[in-house]
Length: 628
Image 1 (cartoon, rainbow, N blue to C red):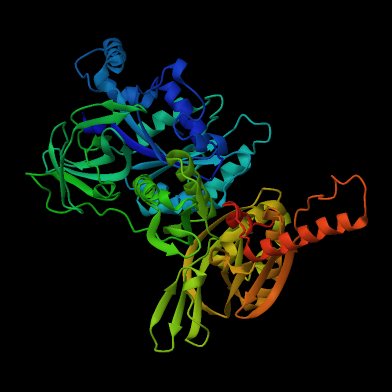
Image 2: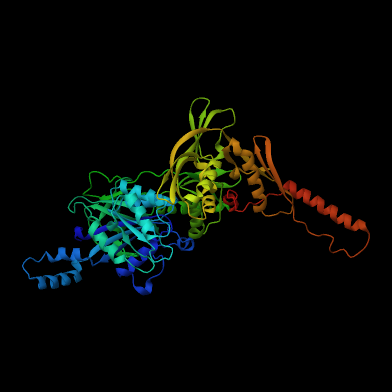
């Protein structure tokens, strides 16, 4: 493959700005997918993505494009110096139709939600250019800025695109000015498109050919290919997604992974159209896949470098910065004998979701499971659903929390990822909690409500910047524990859905924190224990106790729900028992018959209260945190 005819790019944007829809139109315009096979959100392969209307996994696809731009055609005409103008034009048209003048466009469609930013970062490392997509009705939003800064750090060529220009509510001129102010570009550098109608898509494809540089690399050098994603096929083993930076890779080559030192054979190599299409060899600059044949999912890690076994590269590619999870929760099976299935499932899911981290743990109440680290609540919810759907597991997931640092009395430092790990009071001197730098982009009429919400979440105001006359960026520092629970939902509610946010870990700060235990039917439920700032302990304990009353199903006996700090009960409630009318079958006789049945029922309920256990539904552990 001629390296100069390859263009690698991705689409980056805030959530719901039309990335997947624009990708659909590109697939149609380039005839990559036949019309009868076309469907909405074609690159979103999971049912979960279609149901929620969001992209969760990055998705690569290879397209072929004959440029329509006259500038590119003029460049081709100049390749025929000994012909007259008419013959040059004819040769140009003939040459354009010929296969050797088509351009290979490798697209990586990326997620937009902040919880899947690691997927975006891996995509950026595999390409030379990025389409920065901005919704004409929404304008520049928080994740737009975050992904743009990440792309600029990778020195990518940015092509700004205003999308959804066909909508009646489109603010094309205003959004254009926002982009000009953001990038410092001219109006002529901005492209306009509609992912729904296909307007402007051909111009964007030509712009990619013209502006995105061809990949660099040495075809004759030893193979160096970066694994930017991977998948597990039950029949063929681990399938690694590659970007080749040097050399080439053919079918049946002997390969080595430079990080794990594992050896294997490329059982098959190919490209994405968007399904697997065998194509050998893969050349420098191309994006494709290799079927490694590995059965152990840990052998082909994301970020590793693939090289040849005999003609090895001297040094691996940089790989990826290790992701830092913000949210921690424990996952258990409802049936203890399903633990081996859970272990296998979470290993395979880790291969497909490199931002997931986990360690084995056990609980007296819930048995064996895994303590998992996530990038946010949505990420946690998606992982739970994928485990249940794709691997047919019935799970219990504990209340999410963040990691804290504790300075013990002997001056050593301990990291606390769950409330049950907190040392006894008096055995430590100081606790530290993680804080994040928060940016909220909002119309100016919602500034007061957002500031009040953030202040109530213990946020510390930094400053306010105006994007234009109508929209502002409000910057805060805020405890991550306050941020992850329900801040996003409340923000959308008080801003009528117009505000957007982005956050990054900042530092650990000293705080006055307390552990609150939840006691249900006289049993401490470790999975519901939480650590909270002392100023909010009473109110949050009351809220959770009242919330549990509505979430836990009624039993045949009275259920007490209590919140305690140490031995002090700070909030309580009760779920009244279900009552069967045991006297309904009576049709007469002395009143003592009725009293006898009622006394018998009363004794039975007292016995059940002493011996009965409450089964807590798995979704309660997440729902209890939300302010519905």
